Structures are given as C-alpha cells and as structure tokens.
Amino acid sequence: MPIDKRAANAAEALADVSDGATIFISGFGGAGFPNFLIRALRDRAPKDLTLIVNSATHRYSYTHELIEAGLVRKVVCTAARGHSKEPSAFERLWMDGKIELECVPQGTFTERIRAGGAGIPAFYTPVGFGTELAAGKEVRRFQDRDFVLEHAMRGDLALVGADTADRYGNLSFRYAQMNFGPVMAAAANVTVAEVRAVLDEPMPHERVQLPGVYVDRVVKVAP
Amino acid sequence: MSVPPLNRLQIAWRAAQDITDGMLVNLGLGIPVSVADYLRPEADVFIQSENGVIGVGALAPPGRVDTDLVDAGSRRITIRSGASIVDSSWSFAMIRGGHIDVAILGAMQVSARGDLANWTVPGKLITGMGGAMDLAAGARRVVVLMSHVSKEGNPKLVSQLTLPATALGCANRIITELGVFDTAGDCFICVVRAESVSQVAIERSTGARVLFTTVTAGRG
Image 1: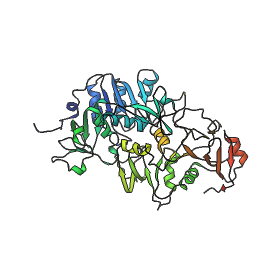
Image 2: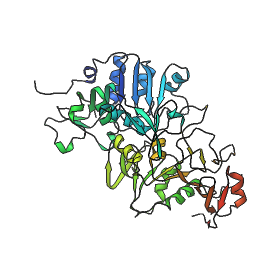
Image 3: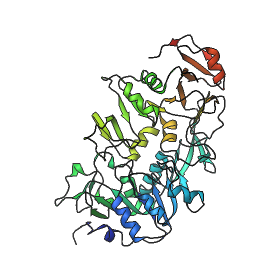
Image 4: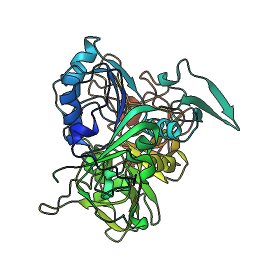
C-alpha cells in the first residue's frame, strides 16, 4: 500500500494514546504549539501522563488545559512559571504535591531529547556543573573542565506543530516554528504533526526540514 | 531616595559600547534585550535567540506581526538581512559549543570569581532556568547587567554566592548603575566609575574587595 500519513482529523490521529504515556509537545514562545492536537488529547483524556514540554504554562499554548483536566502526573520542562502574578494551575498542583516537576536547562533538555532519537543513551555536558542540578549525578573531568552526565529522554508520542506537510509526512516549518519539533519527532515512538497545509504533490526536497521518516501522522488544521 | 547615577537604559547603552562588528550576541530577558536599541544602526552584529533565530531584528511593527516569528522572550520580532533559523538542538549546540561571542544576562548575584546566580531564590515560586544555565556555561564571554544592590539593599557583587548557582566562574563583566566591573578572582576591578559616584560609595555597596582604575565615565 502506498505511504499516506494524512489523518482525517486530530481525534483519529490520537485514537491510540493510552494512560501513562510520555508525551512530547513542541512549541516555543507562540511558534509551533500544536494547539489543535493538545485540545484533541484533552478530549480523549488519557490519565497519568508525563509531559515533556518547554514551558509548563505558556500564554499562547493550551498545555495548561491538560494539567487543569487532571491528566498529568509529571512535567519535565525548562520554564515552570506562568506569565501572570497568580500561580498557574500547574503551580498550584505542584505546591500541593499533586504533580511532579523536573526542571531542566533548555540546552540539556533539547540535547537529552536529541540523544533519545539518535541512539545515544547519555552524554556529558558542562551545563549544571557546580549547581544543585548536578546533585547525585556522575561528574567527570575532561581536560581542565568538569562535566555532568545527563541521560537521554524518549517518549511514546510527540505532538509537533509545523506549517506544511505532504503525504509522506515530510514537514516544513515557518520561521521559529521548528524549535523542538525535529528532536521530539525523532525521540518518540509515534509522532503526530499538525500543519496548516498538506500538499497534493510531494514536497520539493529542499523545502523538507524534517524528513517524513520521523512523522507518522499529519493532520491539517484550520490556519 | 536619590536618583541612581545610571538608569537601566544607560546600563544597556554602556553594554552596547562593548559590542563590535561581526559579533554573535545573545541578549537575556529584561534590560539585556534593550542593549539592541543602542547598537549603532550600521552595526553588523548578529543577535542570537535561544529558540533558534540567528539575526534577530527590531520588534515587529503593528500590522507586520507574525506569530511564527518570535524570540526567546515570546516577543514578535523581525529578522535582519543574512538571518537564519535553526532548531533548538542546533541553537544550544551553538551556545554550549562556544560560538556565542557574548551573552548579556541579568542576575541576582555575581561573585568575584565569576560565579553567577540568576535562576532561583530558595522559598520563592519556582521559575525554571530556561536557557540561562546553558548560556552562562557556554558563551565565550558573559556580561551581567543588574542593579548594584538588591531591593533590600544587600550587595549583589559578592565574594561568595549565597543564592543557588547558575554556573561557576563564567561571568566576566558586570555593569551596574555605579559603573563597570570585571571579575578578577579574589576581587572586582572597577574599570569605569559612573560620573559622580565615589570609590567609597562603590566599596560600601559591594560585598567583596574592589580595585579601581582611574577612568570615570559620563552618563552616555
């Protein structure tokens, strides 16, 4: 059967998400948030999720709706604080001990995901040495500098926002949409992309920023 | 309360004076982003943002806002000629790999050894460090823009950090309302003293030994 990764809609694309899943969500600063997929995931309502997402709460993302709906057991992120003065839903749950938080420096965050999709189980980084983040971690000196051992992250599912796809799952991004999309797609067992347009013809190779080998389903959403 | 010798924007202006053509620069949230406003218009400088934008331009004017084109502070921006955009993994490889000439950051404390604290205060609501630790550990040069003392009046230039460290031995220069200070291991060296600020005033506000060179600067 010819390859065709186009799904009819977001609900269909997420029909097999199960309780306890570890889910990557791409997006940064308003660019590349897969907000239609996040809403569809909320409606499907799997429980005990681990979210691996740059911001636990962001004013342009719907991630917080998953947290408010009580679907999330743990968040791995680089920025936990919301934009408002009042604590976010995430912060209230965290302060009540009802949600687990792992805060990771952003470069270590993306490199742990990259490693997960690249067959590298762990790596040494200078980031975090001498800080409380290095507590309990292996430290090793190379030449004249100390490095901390960090472990790769993998996930069951990645939700990625992009601009354009073709039926092979090839993706192209606009401006800063790319951010964590490529590494998350590579480190997940299943990757679903939401895009604004699906081309009828194969995407010209020079436009492909993420090869379709990393993408399992694409969903066209209202732009 | 008296007017501080240099205000926040003048601190940003002073930081911009150290940036020369050809540099790749990362500007943190807060005062650091306004350093870009004080670069010479013809300055051939690339501003890198952690989300992968290499060549951040001015903020997008009304009517030209594009929600896909943002910087690490979620600001809707434009890009300069020659700009490129990469993914986060490449962006941080650039940062950790020593390809950023200077990172300009805010901070809560800096020690004379260059240890930097700018990500969390014990007992306060968690914030997350974003890219601050990577930038501090990876940039070739780290310049800190901050007030000389805390809201409570405590020195922020110290001999030893009392707040959790972001990275050790990384900060090279601190610019405050009182002047320009370089980290020198066991002391700070005041390389520029703001106009009307005495050595005694600086010593009183600094939690470590300060050596002085003779330069006194105007307000810029």
